[in-house]
Length: 298
Image (cartoon, rainbow, N blue to C red; front, side, top):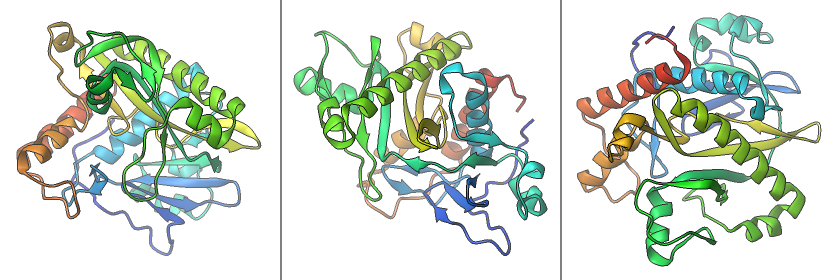
């Protein structure tokens, strides 16, 4: 069960230095074959980390990722091992109060530097691209689609994974040129299978999974699902009842994006602080998405 807590922008484990620190997570080495991923409550939008953290967000991301890794047949093989700090290698159990509810022990993987995006509904940057020429990442779609139109079958639209700046959408053939056809086809098939299974699960629980972004790596030479999975940070969720009534009501960080767009910010660092009501409503939406998907109490 998750409880309302003060937002935590930075988590420090005394005596330990992160192997890698990302926009939201810190990653620690746990022996030669494992890592410990720790999620803060920071929020990134338009490639900038906002100065205002979102209460309980790191807990939601961790709980949902752990949940999806364990219930989706299509998620296997994956890198998840445990989300119980007492089962982590030393010295991490001694930091259990800081790690509880917001960390995962995972297998170490050789990351494939591609964002595996699956779109089951036309919206966002995909819809804008479609309006310009009827294509999304080189895939031609039928005419007459509107914002929120369902795509059957879903489309796989990969993007580069950039260390700084914006990820760049690429076509499937450009992906093949980068990583080879066999790997590209395997990424596409795995990504679409995961999305389809999760879309059905979400729909039955009152949410529309519009799109998602997945990452993969190699563990012992095997293609393996890694990182976070199907969270409101990496996915776009809408309320199903509102969608069926013709409205797109978001259960992800779209509330923050909308406020940033209205604020006049030019999407260049530094990002502005968020007002209290946007922080509160965003936290509530993340928690509600988690509750619907997993049944976990707030």
